[in-house]
Image 1 (cartoon, rainbow over the protein chains, first blue to last red):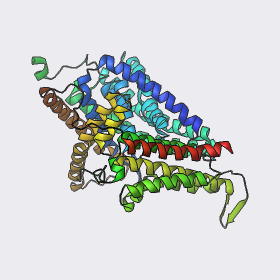
Image 2 (cartoon, helix red, strand yellow; image 1 turned 90 degrees about the vertical axis):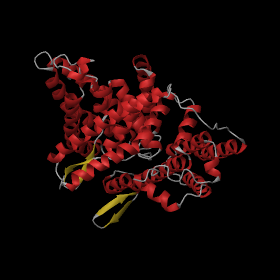
Image 3 (cartoon, chains in turn brown, cyan; image 1 turned 135 degrees about the vertical axis):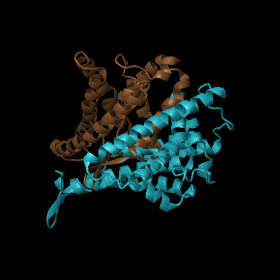
Length: 229
Length: 254
């Protein structure tokens, strides 16, 4: 899903550089207010984790495989804006050092895979979680909402990519011919994303609930060692 | 694992390696932007960009086989576009190739995507293979990229190998226990792997943070060598940027 250079026209990638740059500045401002500058090592190592997790391919069907995106996971664990910034760093390094995704298309890739799949889906997730929390336990509502919205994050990122390709009209295909395959494949890859994200957060909730940003933990007792401190 | 697999050749000695990271970054980004915005129906600006890339690659003493292998990263996209060519509704004469036919417009799209993707990707490879990661990040810092990003990226670079090694060890352990993930329902195993990878990496991060705080880390890295823009740096940046922009502007003018 990393768009290389040459597939987008100037108005598309130029606009998306503006949007992504503006959002990055806002996220930086938000994070600086809430996060201790000294916590930067944590974010860096989380970025390395997302990067390594993306190298684990999972099978979709015999022969075809997808890889993990991790934007929703980063947002749920670190908060929407810190998660967004971690994804920005991951995408920028993939572009500059690994040549994965073009330099001109970097703004578009950040828009799709960090903004749409990150904060945009995160805020929908947070709304759904608090709605469900009125009836269900926080753990259940968090995991159920997360499963759906992490699936949606991959589908929406794919759809955004398809919209950009058809607006650019560099590849002279009808919108249907672009949308069908991209959204179809991403709807399947999204299942993998949803399963992995949900399992990871479920395990982390069990082992270290304090590491999950969007979990307030009203209905759970902290492990004994932490209560004793 | 070989720990220098990203910027493996960044410690070679050549005129290009010796340049200031800022000069290289600006010059190569200028070539990318000029190339990506050039219309497809003129071929000679692409020849200029390709010549610039070849001259820099030659001067950098990087093995060409290495450059070519790294450039394969865009091959899947170019292949997908190539497969789509018969379905494109382009202008111009139609060539009949037996079972399917292609239009000139469709071939122009393929040429456009392939040329832009290859030139852009080789610029990025040249930048990252002739500059050490720390120098590149410091260069970006001097170009007013917020220190937040360069520091996060530096930590990411430092720990990525350790975490990938960790992931590889888990993969080996999994495979030696006869895991043959072929279908989507095998994914639960991968979910648990990612979860324990995350917990291990967070616990490592906490230890690292404590160790760094104990040694007086204040959010920035001390540098032991300072980079300066000398005459060759200005010359390189000026000549490459001017040639690329000239190639772009003459098309605009016509």
